[in-house]
Amino acid sequence: MAGKRLVKRIVGPRLARRLLPTSLFGRSLLIIILPIALMQLAVTYAFFTASQDDVNSRLSDGLAGEIAAVVGLYEDTPDRLQDLAGRAQRTIGLDIAFRPGPLPTSDRTNFFRSLDRTLRERLEEHLNKPFWFDTTRYENNIDIRVAVDGGSLRFIAPRDRAFASQGPKFIAWLAGATLILTAVAVIFIRNQVRAIERLAEAANTFGRGGDISDFKPHGAREVREAAEAFLAMKDNIQRHLEQRTALLASVSHDLRTPLTRLKLELALAEPSSRCEAMKRDLLEMEHMIDEYLDFARGEGGEAMERRPLFAIVEAVAEGARRAGATITVEGDPDLSAPVRPNALRRALANLAGNAAAHADEVRITVEGRDGVVDIIVDDDGPGIAPERRAEAFKPFNRLDESRNQNEKGVGLGLAIARDVARSHGGDVALDTSPLGGLRAVITLPA
Image 1 (cartoon, one colour):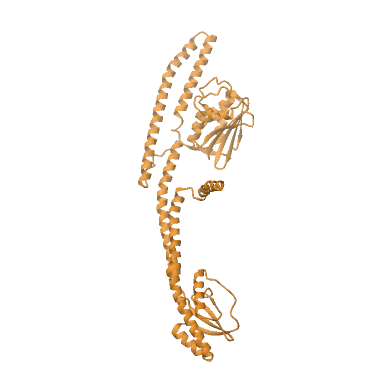
Image 2 (cartoon, one colour; image 1 turned 60 degrees about the horizontal axis):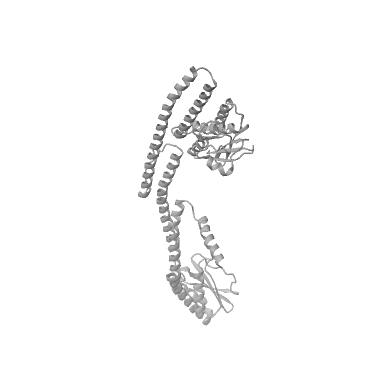
């Protein structure tokens, strides 16, 4: 028993979460429309079960009494049916006719079953004879038949003699008012949600490094406050990035001056094994400085352009081939995406260079799927253990045990590649390559 209660507690909220709308617009509409619908159901039920049922009961009682009186007069003087029918038409609005044969056996029920039930109860109270009626055949009249000797008397009575005519009108007015109120609610909620959607769009654009200079806070007070806080945060982030870039650019510039003097001194010095080793150290130091600066600067100032990705990949592969790497490029040459070309080249160059440094064969594939484009870099090197792949994206992490000794660089290649991909609204993921080594996948929105 306790287990069943636990299952209900777990399944119930999960099912509710699956059925409820996920958007703020849908949930806001549900908050407004659901109480209105419940209120209308309650009002309609109360109207028909209380006021409307009472009125219908009184009207049906009067009609049933008149029919019973006419049936009694007919049985007393059956030869005066025509005179009785004329008098009933003039005084109480009933059309009367004699129909030979038994009563009909068909039974068509009114949509509002309570109306038929009320009329049947009143006819049973006033008549001690079999009867039949139909409230659905005619729009404005009711067909009632009472068994008499040799056949039945047919009464055609106006509908409003038995039922209050205001019920359907009341429901129509209620439904109309509901539609109008719902439309007004949709308009107002749409305007409020649009402000939140614009704020989310601005945040996504800024996260991808786009320009949001035309974004202005608007909407409800709380939404404007959130937008103003976002703009303040954006300014702080941009100021921090500018300061970091300026600092590292200054450091890089200051370091390049003595490095250049050292290179000049080594170029003029007598050739020796010691000089060659020092030249290699200087080249490595220059590469480290470039890598630090690339990681700090990024490509935030570069504009987004829709470019064919295959051409960018082929250009990166050609550069790696000139450096001695063996790289093949495959995929659809027509696939394109909005990218910052220089930033994407830097990310691909890092991945391709990293793969070429640790493997004999490298393959780059461009594929499209479900609104995104994948650029897949496969190699046949030693790879990275699955439990250490998340660690590989940390800056300055070289993973010497997993890959061959990193003789050049400071472990920023994967960090730069992921930073570039995420600035485009995508990401970089690592997996096991079909070639036996590491697979790096750059996913970009198409």
